[in-house]
Length: 288
Image (spheres, rainbow, N blue to C red):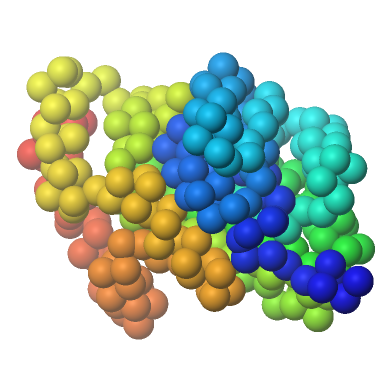
């Protein structure tokens, strides 16, 4: 009986992953199931989620798909409740769904702010709220929130996105300190450049407010390539290794840790460097 009050890593565990149909979410799902975890793929893109789940099951894994709008707390709470009723436990809650709305802040409308706050921040809060009570009651569990490297450093040209990701880092580290005495772990993922749709166009439900020509878009994507974006499955494999070790903040690729450290030690200097880099990029791409 005592063993049943312990988190499983990862064989025999149950996990829910939001934003699971593509990108980092899909990478996490595929890697979790390889390691023996039963996974619920939660996404608005239900057809894509079902295709991924079907492929996993055909390969011998265990996965189910569920249509979910992370902004709707009732849907989130229902999914968590039904998952626990079916499997008897919830070991991992990956609050991963998110979008980007890129552009200069002067281009934002209040509707842009509201949309990204609803999905990126309130969606994570809904997942935490739905899973936390279950996990504290059972005496174990691991909440993993996907933020971004943009949640650790200044990110001009993506201010709304960075705002939500800084908030997720603060939520996660604060909850980690509070939840430890109740047997619940909390980690936050801070990926830098990962090859997903968010890098190109803000994700399935995101967008760019910049009116870029095809040539400008091409040059912008080429500028990202110098950072050698990490494949989602490689990110997921390394991230799960660190989650298994209960790391608080997961920064990948790991070489970006030195940038994070520099920003922490020299915040004013960091802002100056980022400002100049941002201005140079806008000039090189003829963005006004």
